[in-house]
Image 1: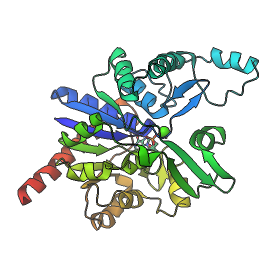
Image 2 (image 1 turned 45 degrees about the vertical axis):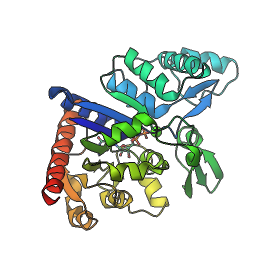
Image 3 (image 1 turned 30 degrees about the vertical axis):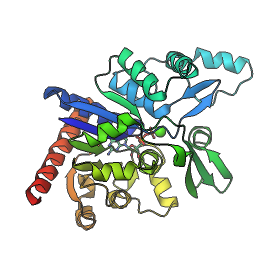
Image 4 (image 1 turned 45 degrees about the horizontal axis):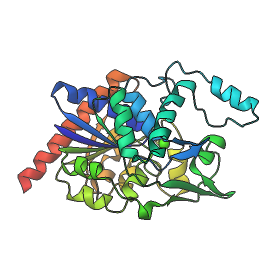
Length: 320
Ligand code: GDP
Ligand code: CA
């Protein structure tokens, strides 16, 4: 079975790892389309937080406590940068730096991000395709009462404390889904929207010109997994962001954002009372344990998601 997953960072990476495990048994193929709108430049390096989170997780190298960064990481480079009087506000570890050196070298040489990412992923032994959503740079600007903030300034430096008035994706009009992304989505037998922040992780992917059309033309059933469980995000500012932008902070609120785009919504059992509201949006609902505590949970949830997608595919075939 060919599966295309749309992912941001930690939530997306965890489900992608589960999908990879559950597909391995049947010889399936996974392509993960990853948000690049929180990429930025620092110390002459191109930082791609979501791509690296997914890459490290699929390589089994991720820090299990944070979900991002590498296990057993050290920060001696940052200490030396601090000795130079730099403010090391963004945690770039010593091992992580190796990824950035290789990426920078290849990007300076003129290679596209898709090509560089595929090369890094291959060298770390990834079994799945790791696909940046686009090769053109896109930047997320968070508009706050304090003024516009670059995404990492909002997220890391200021610890997501600002109210979010609007989210802007700079450069999105000129960006396009890559050829590899188009191929992965149109050739997929199931498309999974991972439990990532719907506004700043999957939002940019869905905002790429042509992406919504690509998804609606794809014949595969499309299933989203809610990152909101019991009215809260499991990590990060998704709940606060949804609230400040006027969305309902619930699985239903997330389903509304994906309305017209997905055939099915996977929600946590804690939110099972929301089933009718989500069904009213024209989606099927699977209520299960949607919280991934560790690798066995990831694979179990992934299997349920794929099983659910398969029933949606059949239902459509029956009608057609
Ligand atoms: P970021 O770039 O690291 O912030 O990553 P994402 O946007 O992919 O992930 C953040 C979202 O993942 C948050 O909204 C979390 O609620 C969600 N998330 C993290 N772990 C889980 C999980 O085990 N289950 C579900 N359903 N959502 C999760
Ligand atoms: Ca991210």
